[in-house]
Length: 212
Image (tube, rainbow, N blue to C red):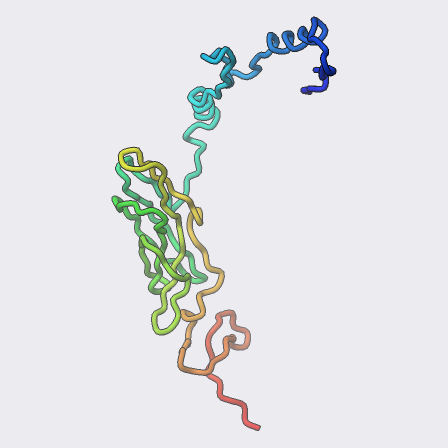
C-alpha cells in the first residue's frame, strides 16, 4: 500500500539532510513497473514518462478473446472504412409466426441516424435507416418500428471513424401482437379486447354504450 506519510514535512528553517532526502531518493530509485503493459521512460524534462502500451494490450486481448468467441447474432451491423453501413437480416417472431427481414448493405453513414426494422404487417417488414419518431405508428397507418443500432463517428475529414451503438441484439420476439394487428380491430369502433370461452386467441369485440 502506498503510504505518503512516510515523507515528513520540514520544520521552518530546517535544512534537508540525509534523513529527509534519502527516503525520497530511495523512493525514486525504487520505482518499477510491475506490468508488461506499463512502461517507464526518462523524458526531456529530467523526469519520467509513464506509458500504457496499448498495442501490446490489444494483442493480449485478441489472444485471450479469440475471434471465435465473439458474439454472433442476427441483425449484426458493421461499418466499412469508407463509412458505409451494412447489417445482416433476421426475424421478428410473433405468437403464431414470424416476419423475415432481409439484410442491407452499402448505406452511407450519417451521424445519429438509426437503423431500424419497420413492420408493415405481422408478417412483412424491412430494415430502414433514418430518425423514426415513435415505435408504434397510430392513426390509419399501422407500422411498428424497432431500433437495431445507431451510427456515430469520431474525428473529421479523412480521419473520420464510424461506429455502431446497439439498441438490441438479435431477433425481436412479441409475446402478444400489437393491438392494431389483433383480429377484429376497428379504430372507429368502441371495442374491448377479450377471448371466447375456452379460447386462447385474443380478439376485439364491438361494444355499445351502456343504457340506463
